[in-house]
Image (cartoon, rainbow over all chains, first blue to last red):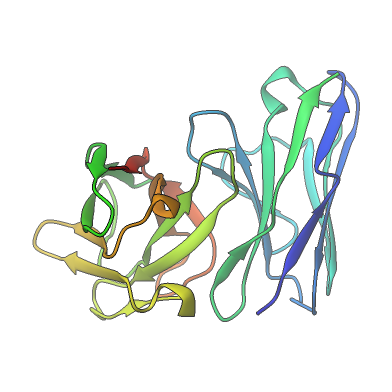
Length: 106
Length: 121
């Protein structure tokens, strides 16, 4: 089973700053990786799929990159609504999620 | 985008079972996988399994194969999750989620509102 490790666990930033989140897979997943955003009390929301494709309605400030074992989600300039927990996810034998990165207001 | 509406919160005794429903509307149903993802309090996301209604057979990770059953009713566009042998470790919010692509278990772009299942004596 492929394990996804997300770093850092918490990212403390101010609105307007750039956020860079990392997801590392225990073995290659090609580009088959997604990112989700989850706010307190809400269901997750698909942000990026297949490594770099933005989901419907996701603003251009969200950018996914990477392939193989190392992936990055970058948010170019944080808006107040972007502060949330972000999970990466792969679908090898079955869908698996990383442990999450919390982006909090500094 | 399809809408998924789940049944309400449940409180269950240890050792009992729970059955949660997820009704889809506003989009195609039978050829897209409907999946169940749970989240324990303060924890991350865990995929419990899914079903493509037109195929009728659930797919489960090994750790849930003995306790989880997912079924679908195409007549009502509803998917059910049943979990048996409940323990306090099963206390969580249970989400249903539909796949982005027909016939696959890939990425989930439509989610239900979540159902809180509390296991307590």
